[in-house]
Length: 186
Image (cartoon, rainbow, N blue to C red; front, top):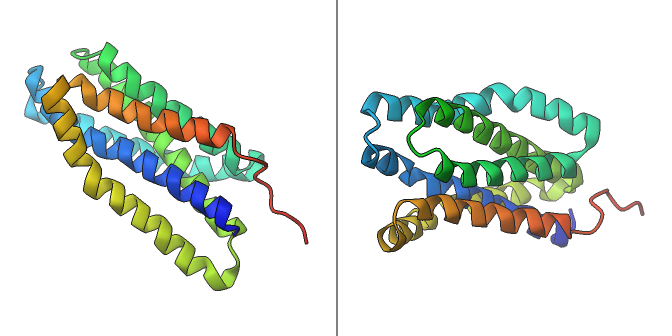
């Protein structure tokens, strides 16, 4: 895989996992708007269940249309959902739907990111490529929750939604302006 493409995938992965890390604070927000503990657990779990259920469909979509359209679609869904959390603060039914769509976007993005690495990385460096990508995930999950907490303390609970939206907007913008995604023939 070219260093350029690997760098783009790693940046995008960092930004998407930053979005996820901002939403680690979502239970604090839900508690502040008087959502029950049981509902908070169900709301948080809905994201993962939706992501799990959609993963096989995401793979079929990648086979049909390619990685870049699925990456863009996933980023767009994550971005839109991140903004919509602010609009529906206490509508628990709508929150479940939003968590499902957020999980679908995440699942599509991750499947396409992994497919990109697998498809475009030479066999002899594939382990290293996946290790670097995994490190970007862990970096986001390790550092962004602290930033999210600081933003939430300074600007209130909606800062986590706006922070999450900003990360995916940056990723979407970066990918839109990335040159062709197809493998170069030698």
